[in-house]
Image (cartoon, rainbow, N blue to C red):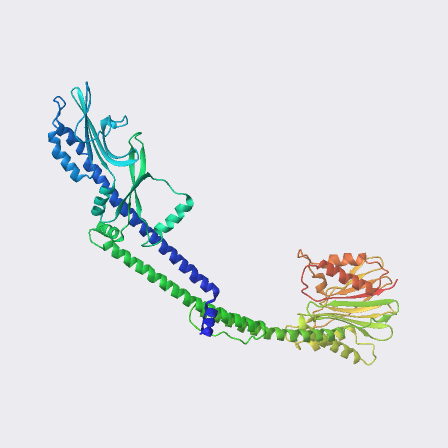
Length: 592
């Protein structure tokens, strides 16, 4: 039993319990409001019944004073016809309990009170009476009465008839019988509002407890007989009758119990709807709690690296759809995990490839008499497709291979390595060891590369052979950006291209050119990645910036220093942007 309760609590959880509590509280409040409204209706209806009975007596009393005056005759005779009043007084005694009547005649000789055996109710009408005629409820010296007053002028005399009936115990008995409820006479007192605390407690006690309602006060609006002001007085208390109130309300529709039946049906419908809502809340809450538990467990498995975990799909609704989406996410995470593992392996292999490629570049700069040579490269990716190599041709001669393979990444790196291997192999095949003529050597490379890596794979190439004894540079430019030659006096010359990139056309022909490099001159060979480097504003580094930079470098700086400064200048220019192409530079500096 305890385990069952624990499992049930685990399914529902405190949030669902809070929802149920809120639903129950709102239902209880609605029920309290309904009971309060019922009590207010019953109390007010019971009080209204008594008030209507009293108002009917007030209306009936209006005819008594005129009847007294009519029965009394005129005041010329002495005494007036009091015998005719006896039947009238007998009727009023029977119809109005404890009623009193008075007849006052004012003559030039004085005031005479008639109707033997009756006390004088008052000496003369008060000043506030309108036209000396009044009928209604009054408060006179702390007592509540139904009073009717009529004054009539007849010749030289004025007759005033007064009828008065106290609101006492006898009248309460008749009201109880007429209203079919317990009406109790209380000590008359003005109606006063209670203090806030008493008012709240009284409201709760009188309205929110069905069947426990205290007697309702019958509050009447009366005239203060001395001042004529309207005042509210408590005359009776009545015990509310639910059956009588229901009966009166039902009769409003002229068919007994129609309204009661409709109210009962509506109350039953509200109860059924609330019950259905609570049941749906519990059911939905249990489903939500179960789905949350499943998601929590699955998320815990995913966090531990178990991407193969799948949620059970328990139902075909939104929660089931959520489970399906979670499973799809788990499948995607599992796939991404595998792809990430593969990417890590690839990255590791690329790092190894990068280390291997670094060994393809010259480890030590060649040493020639009066000349310094240096090169630098920076791949856009882990490995690149730019190539520079220094090949010893013997007898103070050096060959410079500078190439930019189309594309980037691993394919370009493989093509670059192959091109280097082919170039070195072809140079070693020459019998004299001095290397093949420049034009024929580039044509051989072109034939070797054409179609080997596909129809659209090619490489721009700059091949140069420098003889330090003669200071002559023999070169072939096969589609590479024209290198910059800076003379000792700062003049600029470009070694333009006159051939196609190698690998495109197997039958292409290339012609070598010679140029003498005088002391103090400097040759800068570069790939298009250097001039195409962009800054944050999208501006290229360009040939002009490159030429301006070359002019600012002091002639005393060797090739190593020039290469370092040039690569740093390009890096500063490209701060905040992504490098999109390989950048390579080779500098040949002839001492002055």
